[in-house]
Image (cartoon, rainbow, N blue to C red):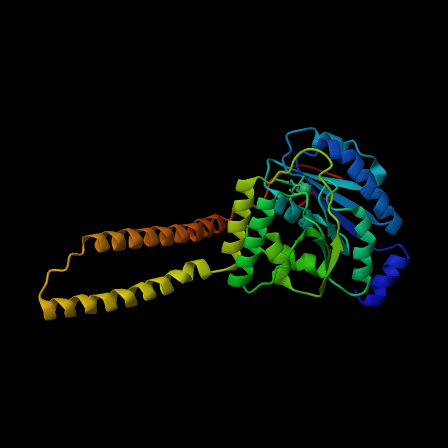
Length: 325
Ligand code: UDP
Ligand code: MG
């Protein structure tokens, strides 16, 4: 769409907006959140859809979603089990029919007030408008520190540029949706994929709020898993670094060997070397295990990809005219 077409679509309230919202155990939030979201969208356009992905919730989330009024245009995809937020977003994007999609969380941490600002930027010709958190107060110091460390490592070992404090809260144009849907990889690190695809993008700062109800579905182990997925999907530095480490160690070993031979030839002494041998053996053993472990991490991911399993399984879906993929 040209900029003029985008502007006309919004002025005439004719743009078709798809809003993708992953939902996992959010029973107390669903009613207020989707009411607010639908009202916000109705102010902007007459043509919209909300695609709620129930990511295998074990509470009443699905029942509450189904009970929402028809005019809110909520379409529901319900997974056969919990597949995780990244896959929930993927499924949502597979099913959108809009000219643009907005991705947001269901827990009010992504404020709907920001949506008109996102759309203004889309009208200006931006294909991706992403929210950047002004504050991370709702998170612990440890979590913030680890997040900063992760982004720092990513910036050093990958070629993609992932903006700080940006998450999944974003607006994406149809062409970006098509590009993202073309990715076949199963281990999906969405923040990396958004950065990888490029296109014209712009940041919009927003204030995050405390979670409305319930608790975050991202524990320490899930976040660690996501971080490893991010690194292994976008960088081969962890694999290649061992070549350099091996080279450096070999050079030192050679120098040391020359030293030992020289000392033995000159002085004919038996060098007492037991502690240094133990240290060298332990050190090299540790390095070898570490490098084999990292190799294993990549092989496990190759294994997961070659199995070609479906990314997700849908148990039920409602509101779609045709049955999805
Ligand atoms: N979510 C999901 N699947 C999961 C965990 C979370 O679909 O396995 C959804 C959740 O319902 C919410 C969004 O993803 O709409 C963000 O989750 P959460 O608030 O737990 O993450 P945080 O805000 O702590 O990053
Ligand atoms: Mg949240």
